[in-house]
Length: 232
Image (cartoon, rainbow, N blue to C red; front, top):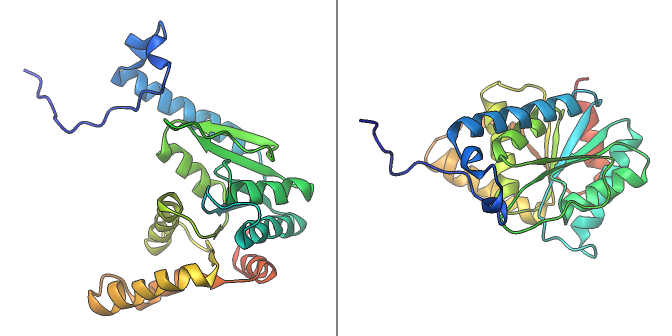
């Protein structure tokens, strides 16, 4: 008798999908494998053709009049002028700002958006757009096709991207991968927690792990730091 796992995670069924005539098959585990594979193939086929890029992350809630929105837009513009493309999560807020800055500077502006139960439309400032159902496929595209991250203030999703990059750098799965945390009013508290809690109190990281990221407040300085650290 096949064992039933009570805590098995099912795919989130998006509104309207139940009406599909193919729903019986497309809700099976076999179909899930094919869907995952198709997302990998589409992502690899599209992004393997682009040149070196920097991924920019940050809150989807950041408004255009916010200082970080303006800084993200300016930072993306500067990256383009230095010969780099820009990848974001394709949504509003900081993602929109970065895509806008890159596109209006005449550069490559890529958005990797995600299907969510609550609709979130891709922003209008992309010349390459991809949509993913699975977060882990999308996250692989960011890390595989970027040569560094610039991370603005954000929520759980932003921190998720940051900690994955920190883990991969710490374990040497990726090397020479600069991580810029933009905005000291936001990131100093985070860095202080890492110092006090992880390093000094519980000793769960090494002191050298603090060198995996830097905190910067100026777009020009952020881009200069990236250019000094990347290898391409």
